[in-house]
Figure 1 (cartoon, rainbow, N blue to C red):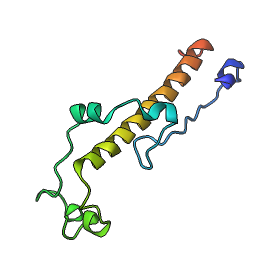
Figure 2 (figure 1 turned 45 degrees about the vertical axis):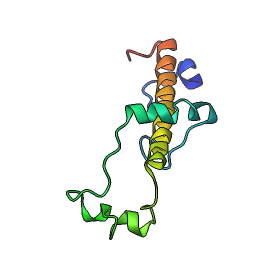
Figure 3 (figure 1 turned 90 degrees about the vertical axis):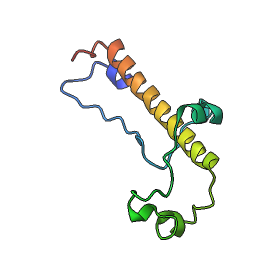
Figure 4 (figure 1 turned 60 degrees about the vertical axis):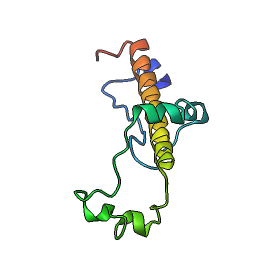
Length: 111
């Protein structure tokens, strides 16, 4: 933002490094409690596990869940993963918003 406000020479490029929607999921503490587990459960439908039409690597008997010892995890665990994912995306949106605000404040939003 400071760079944008410093009347930078043109042309320039801006790189906004975020993790996007990929593990490891995480966000600063102030974003971690943005969604409660109950809110996530109300808004998110988990994909059913171990269905026959999924590729073999999803199989509980011979796939990743078996080899990574994930078959014992209950649905609340996967809702917690979704909650962490959503907080990370919320933080990414916040950062992008700061960038847009910086462009606007520097008069470069239409450039």
